[in-house]
Length: 329
Image (tube, rainbow, N blue to C red; front, side):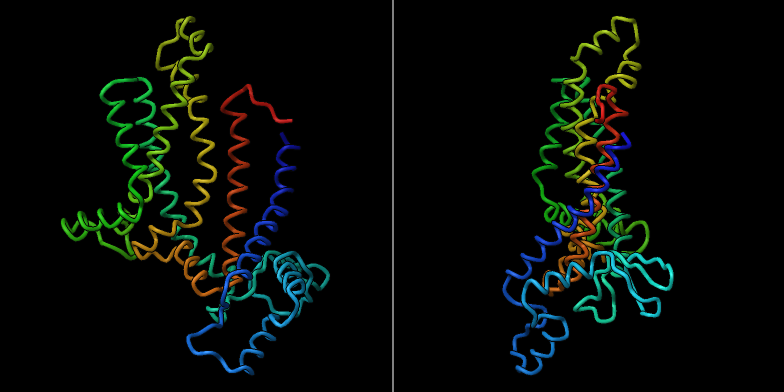
């Protein structure tokens, strides 16, 4: 397993650089730029801006400059640095993953912006996924154990409803009912425990629906397998069969779904943050796209891609603990 983990860890950085390269190419292909305004800038001013940010260089030089900024490099110890991962040795600073300063938020580094806005997205994302796991696992397990019952049909109908109603519809409905109608929760903004209730419910609905359906399908398949029949033939009670044998195999589809889902939740969900005016990472990413803030776009995309690969690695490792038949070569 150690070789498998090391191999996957070594792949993360090249894959992240590939994602950043594709994103950089798409940004350059899109029309417009960060200094575009309704009124055209004087030619001298535009030339100075291009020279300052290296936009007057050939495209391949701009690309190499971008790669040189975000990959590890050595700087003299007396040179000031504001972001990135740094450590000093022999009078030099080695700096990695430095996306530079934002083009729109003057004087603010991309790494600092991500660090500042990530806690909002992470708080809502973790709480939403915990709620989705609690609801989805419970509904899926009970529906599988009571197949073709009223609870089975009812829970799966609610799951289909959760999949069908998008966040930008569910969010305003919850605000209309519980904030503007019953005055129980605040309609928007970040402040206190009550302010995160509606965003968490809105965000967890679709994930709870997915988890419920995946859990039901996985449990139905496992409950009909040979080793479950063997466990029952040995005289084990249903609770032991369910918790010790069936559940480990039945939730493998949920574990597979958890990796990319949790990474997306932690990195910020755009719609929910926009609806509830939460200053999370998803909200700032949308603004960076509108502003054509290239360093901030690349920073968020690289962060999200690395996060997805790390969570997928954790998911792959967990397979070996859930299913003893899985081996890592």
